[in-house]
Amino acid sequence: MTALYFLVDTVFTLYVWALILSVIFSWLIAFGVINTHNQFVYSISHMLYQITEPALRPIRRILPDMGNVDISPIILIILLQVLKVFILQDILLPLM
Image 1 (cartoon, rainbow, N blue to C red):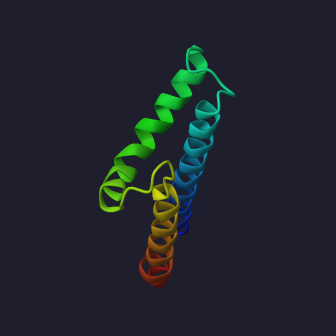
Image 2: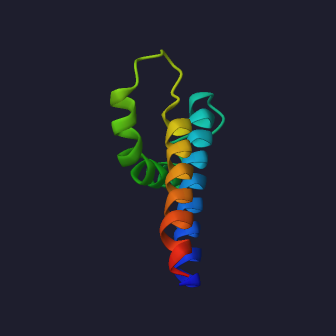
């Protein structure tokens, strides 16, 4: 059961880091710091997009348009942290 607790915690943590990296990559691409014509940069950017976009898309549909500001990753990180605490402390911890 401890292994399941650790696995759930690790999966949530890795997904939050993927969200943070996706945001950083989008900023670096937007400001021209990195070039998406580089195959390595493109592959990392595309992988992060494929991992994070399915969870971000519904949040972006619900949020009103705020111009160039996208707060959907922040909202998703908060929701993931709440879900993580709920799963770990209310579901898995009593089973241990």
